[in-house]
Image 1 (cartoon, one colour):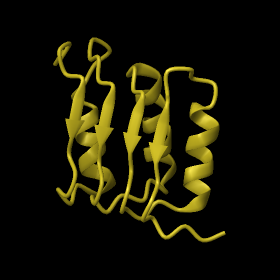
Image 2 (cartoon, rainbow, N blue to C red):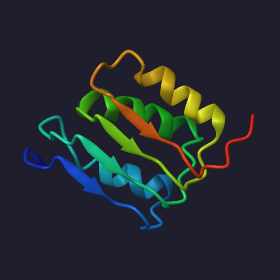
Image 3 (cartoon, rainbow, N blue to C red):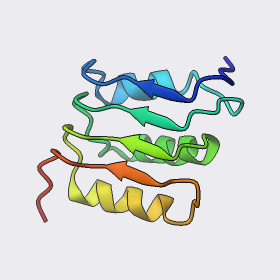
Image 4 (cartoon, one colour):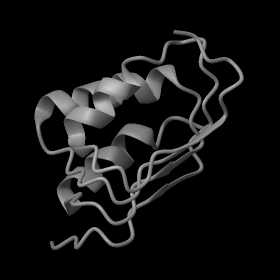
Amino acid sequence: TSHPSLKYLDLSANNLHDKGLFAFLHSLNSGCQLKTLQVRKNNLNLKQGTYMRTLTQLLGMLPLSHLGLKDNHVSEEVAESLFELVKHQAFIEGIEFEGNNMVP
């Protein structure tokens, strides 16, 4: 489904887990102009390879400038992978990782 007018979406505190988030994101298509996605407090960890590959595809498809991942279970390793993924995409202005208990 195309959602061209959707620019900001806050799905925070819905206990989506990785599977629920990606099920929702797959419903979006390349016509979507989503700029900000907040998914705080959703028990996300993004550790499984499938989810990281899917996120890579989605970030390439959506013109996101902000991604809010606060208060989930994202590891430092996953955060570093996301940073590597987006550092060459000029439209990404920020990803929020606060409250993820990252340990080296």
